[in-house]
Image (cartoon, rainbow over all chains, first blue to last red; front, side, top):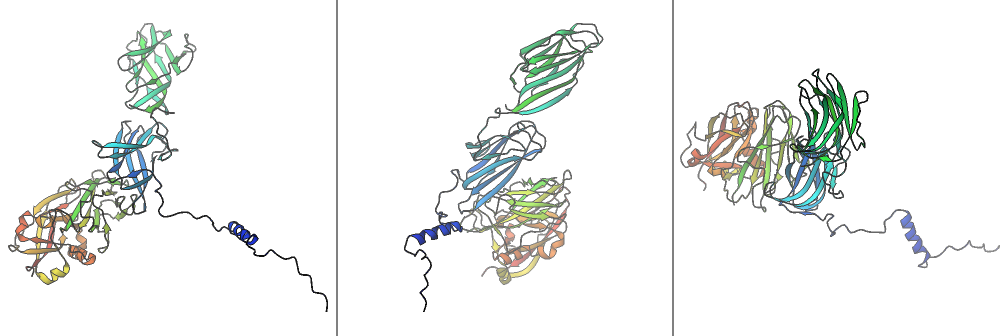
Length: 305
Length: 267
């Protein structure tokens, strides 16, 4: 008859221990979710509740021509829909602050972002502030500030998660200004425009003396439009038909006294100039045919009152 | 319960390809009037008159979206209505619509448009409207009232004249149902308003090549929506019922021929 074959090694039975554990592990490894999430009756995803009285107030200052900012927002409406909104605001290049109201609807404000359209927009050229306002532009009240800071082509501004920044904070817009030639026989002024704060990094100017005989002495004055509060008198004098290149640089720790190859280089104080303040390129004993030429300056600008 | 048909008109000047918000005609507002929220408030039609191909865009957070919303391409020199007669967009009281338009970039070119809004219940207004079915029952004679308008070149409503300023043949103390109109020249909008319309403008596009549709403008709107939208004007109010139009910078004059149906007294 033969012997009864030896059965193979017995597999674990479903005894309430091993098989259930293996089933759970099997489900996890094959992707079936064990964890369930609540999808109804949950708290809204934003803490900012907007009533039908509220609007978005956008205030901006800008120095770049042809600038338009695009404001995008999303609201969670009472019926559960997420409503996207988009507005545009054309900005003058005068650095003056302009404001506009954009109506919102009742719901929870989820996010707001602002991006500039002019390319390139560099940091320091366009500054925006976005808030929640109740009432009109003239008579309303701004209840909460959401966004405040510079926008540029690489970096927009967004709420939530961005910090409110002062317009004088951080780096400004660095630019080289080519001012050309001054009037004959006159002091040449470099004036900070309205709506700007400047930090002057360098000034380059070529003074050309006429044939009139006189001993001229170059001076640089800084005033607030009326009161001089800094004056640098260059030791090297300029005589008839001579020329002198003068360069001033911020944080330069010396003042060259003697002309070298027709040029002197001297330091500038480290401070910011307010709107309307002036840098004056003057000449002691200036003659009517004398002229400042090829004046350029490199400044860092912030938008501010 | 006071129904009303209202018109919101606006214009832009040389917008080019940039969406430009309407400058509203005098007296109009993009804020939906304070109507009964439990009743219908409908954007029934919208149209525009462009001299350069462009787009009319109407949006608000209460519409589908506040990015593009309702958007119509506007051909050159053709004032077409853009929504099917039977389809209307629900509006919400006190919501502020945003209306923007693109079009010609030629300096001084006025591109304009209008929106027609129906209020089922607008407190303070009691417009008189009748359905096509009631016109069928009560209609007696057809009467055409012609008015030659001389519009201005500045955008918005202009050229206003009384209903009886040129043809004064309405029979005394008689109701007339306005079913449509015809125009001899193109303009953005022709409108009629008076005591019987709650002093709100009942209007339509001024397109001379669509006579077959505009002669039954209010009739078709009523029939397709199922809402009485044919204004009823009583001849006693003819001097206080005014017709005007919206025209572009060319200020082309036109004649409007209002198509009325004389009504027998309601039984």
